[in-house]
Image 1 (cartoon, rainbow, N blue to C red):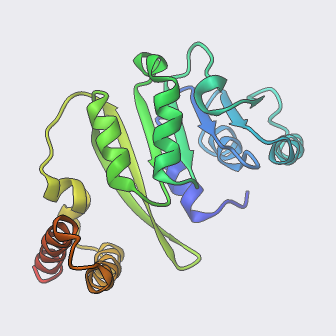
Image 2 (image 1 turned 90 degrees about the vertical axis):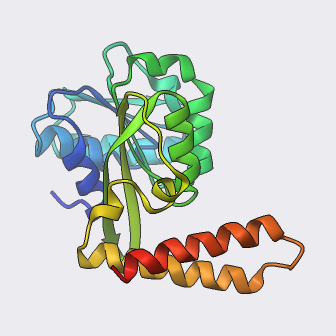
Image 3 (image 1 turned 120 degrees about the horizontal axis):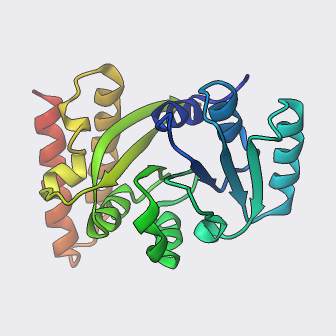
Length: 222
């Protein structure tokens, strides 16, 4: 089946024995990939819009996986059902992801794994999940249509991270592949542009941005 690189990478990170819920499922291609290609027994795909869910229904019928995927119209974790132990969220801003998590924090006691791919504010997402008793077990990058996305995998367990590790990624910073180098170089360019645009009165932000630039220059040059 056809699926973009970002969704495929997320799907490949879902534990095979899990019962996953994909929040903001759009056309349900991730859930279809999980049950059709990865052998997941059942999954739930949820969205808060009727249009995407209608297309999702058509896709599920096309791939003949009606008996394995349940579609739910709901906001975020309101689509939770008993037994779900894995959550996937991608294609939305990090602050929206945090809001989804905040709105149903009590349900997290049942969630062992969260696989999140925010479009931005990834540090805010990391801070939120770490505060709620999760730690990072995997970080992946994927390039799709010339945009590099982060994929973060969290599981239960407390762990402390320095700001440097939060910023660079505790697992990502150990990698030396070309995509990781490209990601850091792009981030460095953006941070340098930001530094040039900051008003002098933004002293705290200037200090932080200079620190981030130093982290990036050091890791790129090692």
